Length: 247
Ligand SMILES: NC(=O)c1ccc[n+]([C@@H]2O[C@H](COP(=O)([O-])OP(=O)(O)OC[C@H]3O[C@@H](n4cnc5c(N)ncnc54)[C@H](O)[C@@H]3O)[C@@H](O)[C@H]2O)c1
Image (cartoon, rainbow, N blue to C red; front, side, top):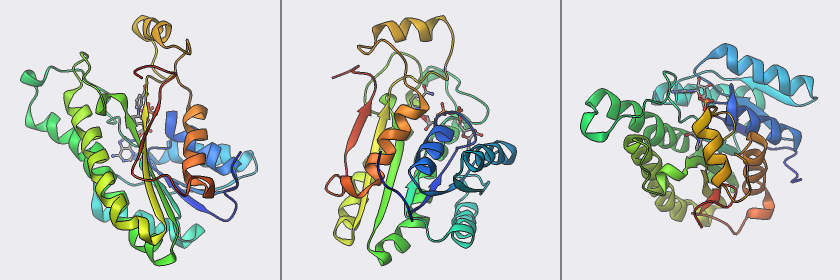
Protein backbone atom coordinates (compact mmCIF):
# COMPACT_ATOMS: atom_id res chain seq x y z
CA UNK A 1 0.00 0.00 0.00
CA UNK A 2 2.37 2.77 1.27
CA UNK A 3 5.88 2.17 2.54
CA UNK A 4 6.22 3.22 6.19
CA UNK A 5 9.36 1.19 6.93
CA UNK A 6 11.62 2.99 9.39
CA UNK A 7 8.82 5.21 10.69
CA UNK A 8 7.49 5.28 14.25
CA UNK A 9 3.76 5.89 14.74
CA UNK A 10 1.81 6.64 17.92
CA UNK A 11 -1.95 5.94 17.77
CA UNK A 12 -4.14 7.00 20.70
CA UNK A 13 -7.22 5.08 21.82
CA UNK A 14 -5.90 2.13 19.84
CA UNK A 15 -6.94 -0.63 22.22
CA UNK A 16 -10.05 -1.39 20.16
CA UNK A 17 -12.21 -0.21 17.27
CA UNK A 18 -10.96 2.29 14.74
CA UNK A 19 -7.66 2.96 16.55
CA UNK A 20 -6.77 -0.74 16.68
CA UNK A 21 -7.44 -0.94 12.92
CA UNK A 22 -5.24 2.10 12.23
CA UNK A 23 -2.41 0.67 14.36
CA UNK A 24 -2.59 -2.69 12.54
CA UNK A 25 -2.61 -1.12 9.07
CA UNK A 26 0.34 1.17 9.87
CA UNK A 27 2.27 -1.79 11.29
CA UNK A 28 1.49 -3.84 8.17
CA UNK A 29 3.03 -1.02 6.08
CA UNK A 30 6.24 -1.32 8.10
CA UNK A 31 5.84 1.31 10.84
CA UNK A 32 6.78 0.48 14.43
CA UNK A 33 3.68 1.40 16.41
CA UNK A 34 3.28 2.78 19.93
CA UNK A 35 -0.22 1.67 20.91
CA UNK A 36 -1.90 4.02 23.37
CA UNK A 37 -5.10 3.48 25.30
CA UNK A 38 -6.48 4.59 28.64
CA UNK A 39 -7.10 0.89 29.27
CA UNK A 40 -3.73 -0.88 29.51
CA UNK A 41 -5.12 -4.39 28.80
CA UNK A 42 -6.74 -3.19 25.58
CA UNK A 43 -3.48 -1.55 24.47
CA UNK A 44 -1.63 -4.81 25.23
CA UNK A 45 -4.11 -6.86 23.18
CA UNK A 46 -3.58 -4.64 20.11
CA UNK A 47 0.19 -4.98 20.57
CA UNK A 48 -0.17 -8.78 20.78
CA UNK A 49 -2.18 -8.85 17.54
CA UNK A 50 0.39 -6.70 15.70
CA UNK A 51 3.34 -8.74 16.95
CA UNK A 52 1.53 -12.01 16.09
CA UNK A 53 1.13 -10.68 12.53
CA UNK A 54 4.90 -10.01 12.33
CA UNK A 55 4.85 -6.29 13.13
CA UNK A 56 6.60 -4.18 15.77
CA UNK A 57 4.60 -2.52 18.56
CA UNK A 58 4.73 -1.50 22.20
CA UNK A 59 1.96 -0.44 24.57
CA UNK A 60 2.06 3.12 25.95
CA UNK A 61 -1.03 3.45 28.14
CA UNK A 62 -1.90 6.99 29.22
CA UNK A 63 -4.81 9.43 29.38
CA UNK A 64 -4.72 11.89 26.47
CA UNK A 65 -6.57 14.50 28.55
CA UNK A 66 -3.58 14.73 30.95
CA UNK A 67 -0.77 16.75 29.30
CA UNK A 68 1.96 15.51 31.66
CA UNK A 69 0.91 11.90 31.02
CA UNK A 70 1.00 12.55 27.25
CA UNK A 71 4.53 14.00 27.45
CA UNK A 72 5.66 10.99 29.51
CA UNK A 73 3.94 8.58 27.08
CA UNK A 74 5.61 10.18 24.06
CA UNK A 75 8.96 9.86 25.89
CA UNK A 76 8.22 6.17 26.58
CA UNK A 77 7.42 5.59 22.90
CA UNK A 78 10.66 7.30 21.91
CA UNK A 79 12.70 5.23 24.38
CA UNK A 80 11.19 1.97 23.07
CA UNK A 81 10.97 2.63 19.32
CA UNK A 82 12.61 5.98 18.49
CA UNK A 83 11.20 9.45 17.92
CA UNK A 84 7.56 9.63 16.84
CA UNK A 85 7.25 10.43 13.12
CA UNK A 86 3.50 9.83 12.75
CA UNK A 87 1.05 11.02 15.42
CA UNK A 88 -2.53 9.79 15.14
CA UNK A 89 -4.82 11.35 17.77
CA UNK A 90 -7.72 8.91 17.52
CA UNK A 91 -9.15 8.69 21.07
CA UNK A 92 -12.46 10.55 20.94
CA UNK A 93 -15.23 8.41 22.40
CA UNK A 94 -15.26 8.76 26.21
CA UNK A 95 -14.50 5.58 28.15
CA UNK A 96 -17.94 5.91 29.77
CA UNK A 97 -19.58 5.80 26.33
CA UNK A 98 -21.31 8.29 24.10
CA UNK A 99 -24.28 9.94 25.85
CA UNK A 100 -26.63 11.69 23.43
CA UNK A 101 -27.94 14.70 25.35
CA UNK A 102 -29.63 17.85 24.06
CA UNK A 103 -27.33 20.85 24.60
CA UNK A 104 -29.86 22.66 26.83
CA UNK A 105 -29.93 19.60 29.11
CA UNK A 106 -26.12 19.28 29.30
CA UNK A 107 -23.91 20.37 32.19
CA UNK A 108 -20.31 21.50 32.75
CA UNK A 109 -19.12 17.96 33.56
CA UNK A 110 -20.33 16.79 30.14
CA UNK A 111 -18.86 19.86 28.38
CA UNK A 112 -15.45 19.11 29.83
CA UNK A 113 -15.68 15.38 29.09
CA UNK A 114 -16.04 16.00 25.35
CA UNK A 115 -13.88 19.11 24.94
CA UNK A 116 -11.07 17.69 27.07
CA UNK A 117 -10.96 14.47 25.05
CA UNK A 118 -11.57 15.77 21.53
CA UNK A 119 -9.88 19.20 21.62
CA UNK A 120 -7.33 19.03 24.44
CA UNK A 121 -6.49 15.39 23.65
CA UNK A 122 -5.43 16.42 20.13
CA UNK A 123 -3.75 19.62 21.34
CA UNK A 124 -1.69 17.69 23.93
CA UNK A 125 -0.57 15.02 21.44
CA UNK A 126 0.36 17.59 18.78
CA UNK A 127 2.23 19.80 21.25
CA UNK A 128 4.17 16.83 22.66
CA UNK A 129 5.32 15.51 19.27
CA UNK A 130 5.61 18.47 16.86
CA UNK A 131 8.88 20.00 18.14
CA UNK A 132 10.90 16.83 17.49
CA UNK A 133 9.24 16.35 14.07
CA UNK A 134 10.11 19.93 13.09
CA UNK A 135 13.66 19.46 14.32
CA UNK A 136 14.07 16.32 12.17
CA UNK A 137 12.39 17.95 9.15
CA UNK A 138 9.71 15.26 8.68
CA UNK A 139 6.46 14.49 10.44
CA UNK A 140 2.81 13.63 10.06
CA UNK A 141 -0.19 14.33 12.26
CA UNK A 142 -3.45 12.67 11.20
CA UNK A 143 -6.37 13.57 13.47
CA UNK A 144 -9.37 11.23 13.54
CA UNK A 145 -12.38 13.50 13.39
CA UNK A 146 -16.05 12.93 12.66
CA UNK A 147 -18.76 14.18 10.35
CA UNK A 148 -20.26 15.49 13.60
CA UNK A 149 -17.45 18.08 13.57
CA UNK A 150 -18.20 19.11 9.98
CA UNK A 151 -22.01 19.06 9.84
CA UNK A 152 -24.96 19.93 12.01
CA UNK A 153 -26.64 16.63 12.94
CA UNK A 154 -29.93 16.14 14.75
CA UNK A 155 -28.60 13.37 17.03
CA UNK A 156 -27.78 15.32 20.26
CA UNK A 157 -23.99 15.27 20.00
CA UNK A 158 -23.28 19.05 20.00
CA UNK A 159 -20.43 18.89 22.52
CA UNK A 160 -18.72 16.01 20.73
CA UNK A 161 -19.11 17.92 17.45
CA UNK A 162 -17.71 21.09 19.05
CA UNK A 163 -14.64 19.22 20.31
CA UNK A 164 -14.04 17.65 16.88
CA UNK A 165 -14.50 20.99 15.05
CA UNK A 166 -12.21 22.71 17.55
CA UNK A 167 -9.42 20.24 16.88
CA UNK A 168 -9.76 20.78 13.12
CA UNK A 169 -9.60 24.55 13.63
CA UNK A 170 -6.45 24.12 15.68
CA UNK A 171 -4.75 21.88 13.14
CA UNK A 172 -5.49 24.19 10.19
CA UNK A 173 -3.56 26.99 11.91
CA UNK A 174 -0.74 24.89 13.34
CA UNK A 175 -0.31 23.21 9.95
CA UNK A 176 0.66 26.63 8.54
CA UNK A 177 3.38 26.99 11.17
CA UNK A 178 4.96 23.57 10.61
CA UNK A 179 4.52 23.10 6.83
CA UNK A 180 7.81 24.85 5.94
CA UNK A 181 9.57 22.44 8.31
CA UNK A 182 8.43 19.27 6.51
CA UNK A 183 5.50 18.40 8.76
CA UNK A 184 1.94 17.90 7.48
CA UNK A 185 -1.24 17.88 9.55
CA UNK A 186 -4.56 16.60 8.25
CA UNK A 187 -7.81 15.17 9.57
CA UNK A 188 -10.16 12.40 8.52
CA UNK A 189 -13.86 13.11 8.96
CA UNK A 190 -15.42 9.70 9.55
CA UNK A 191 -18.95 8.66 8.84
CA UNK A 192 -20.59 5.96 10.96
CA UNK A 193 -18.34 2.96 11.58
CA UNK A 194 -19.29 -0.72 11.73
CA UNK A 195 -18.40 -0.99 15.43
CA UNK A 196 -21.73 0.72 16.15
CA UNK A 197 -24.63 -1.73 16.09
CA UNK A 198 -28.40 -1.60 16.31
CA UNK A 199 -31.40 -1.03 14.08
CA UNK A 200 -30.60 2.67 13.62
CA UNK A 201 -27.05 1.86 12.47
CA UNK A 202 -28.45 -0.56 9.88
CA UNK A 203 -30.91 2.12 8.75
CA UNK A 204 -28.06 4.62 8.33
CA UNK A 205 -26.00 2.05 6.41
CA UNK A 206 -28.81 1.84 3.83
CA UNK A 207 -28.54 5.62 3.24
CA UNK A 208 -24.78 5.54 2.60
CA UNK A 209 -24.12 5.62 -1.17
CA UNK A 210 -21.55 2.83 -0.76
CA UNK A 211 -24.30 0.86 1.13
CA UNK A 212 -22.22 -0.06 4.16
CA UNK A 213 -20.72 1.42 7.31
CA UNK A 214 -16.99 2.10 7.53
CA UNK A 215 -14.43 -0.38 8.82
CA UNK A 216 -11.26 0.27 10.85
CA UNK A 217 -9.30 -0.90 7.80
CA UNK A 218 -10.94 1.77 5.60
CA UNK A 219 -9.67 4.37 8.06
CA UNK A 220 -6.24 2.73 8.41
CA UNK A 221 -5.74 2.88 4.63
CA UNK A 222 -6.49 6.62 4.56
CA UNK A 223 -4.15 7.24 7.51
CA UNK A 224 -1.39 5.22 5.81
CA UNK A 225 -1.72 7.40 2.70
CA UNK A 226 -1.65 10.71 4.58
CA UNK A 227 1.27 9.43 6.69
CA UNK A 228 3.32 8.47 3.64
CA UNK A 229 5.75 10.46 1.51
CA UNK A 230 3.16 10.25 -1.29
CA UNK A 231 0.96 12.75 0.59
CA UNK A 232 3.74 15.31 1.11
CA UNK A 233 1.80 18.11 -0.66
CA UNK A 234 -1.42 17.58 1.29
CA UNK A 235 -1.68 19.55 4.52
CA UNK A 236 -4.28 21.40 6.62
CA UNK A 237 -7.07 19.41 4.94
CA UNK A 238 -10.06 17.41 6.11
CA UNK A 239 -10.77 14.25 4.12
CA UNK A 240 -14.27 12.83 4.52
CA UNK A 241 -14.12 9.02 4.81
CA UNK A 242 -17.81 8.30 4.73
CA UNK A 243 -18.82 6.01 1.86
CA UNK A 244 -19.99 8.97 -0.23
CA UNK A 245 -22.39 10.56 2.27
CA UNK A 246 -22.59 14.35 2.52
CA UNK A 247 -20.88 15.48 -0.66
N1 LIG B 1 -17.41 4.66 15.72
C1 LIG B 1 -17.91 5.57 14.89
O1 LIG B 1 -18.99 5.39 14.28
C2 LIG B 1 -17.18 6.85 14.66
C3 LIG B 1 -17.70 7.77 13.75
C4 LIG B 1 -17.03 8.95 13.51
C5 LIG B 1 -15.82 9.20 14.17
N2 LIG B 1 -15.34 8.29 15.06
C6 LIG B 1 -14.10 8.60 15.75
O2 LIG B 1 -13.19 7.52 15.63
C7 LIG B 1 -12.34 7.49 16.78
C8 LIG B 1 -12.36 6.09 17.38
O3 LIG B 1 -13.69 5.72 17.69
P1 LIG B 1 -14.07 4.21 18.05
O4 LIG B 1 -15.47 4.00 17.61
O5 LIG B 1 -13.03 3.27 17.62
O6 LIG B 1 -14.07 4.30 19.66
P2 LIG B 1 -14.09 3.12 20.74
O7 LIG B 1 -14.95 3.59 21.85
O8 LIG B 1 -14.40 1.79 20.10
O9 LIG B 1 -12.58 3.05 21.24
C9 LIG B 1 -11.99 4.18 21.80
C10 LIG B 1 -10.81 3.78 22.65
O10 LIG B 1 -10.29 5.00 23.19
C11 LIG B 1 -9.92 4.76 24.53
N3 LIG B 1 -9.94 6.02 25.28
C12 LIG B 1 -11.02 6.68 25.75
N4 LIG B 1 -10.64 7.78 26.42
C13 LIG B 1 -9.28 7.83 26.35
C14 LIG B 1 -8.31 8.72 26.87
N5 LIG B 1 -8.68 9.77 27.60
N6 LIG B 1 -7.00 8.47 26.62
C15 LIG B 1 -6.62 7.38 25.90
N7 LIG B 1 -7.52 6.48 25.39
C16 LIG B 1 -8.83 6.71 25.62
C17 LIG B 1 -10.94 3.77 25.05
O11 LIG B 1 -10.43 3.05 26.19
C18 LIG B 1 -11.17 2.87 23.83
O12 LIG B 1 -10.33 1.73 23.83
C19 LIG B 1 -12.87 8.55 17.75
O13 LIG B 1 -12.12 9.74 17.61
C20 LIG B 1 -14.28 8.79 17.26
O14 LIG B 1 -14.73 10.08 17.60
C21 LIG B 1 -15.98 7.12 15.31
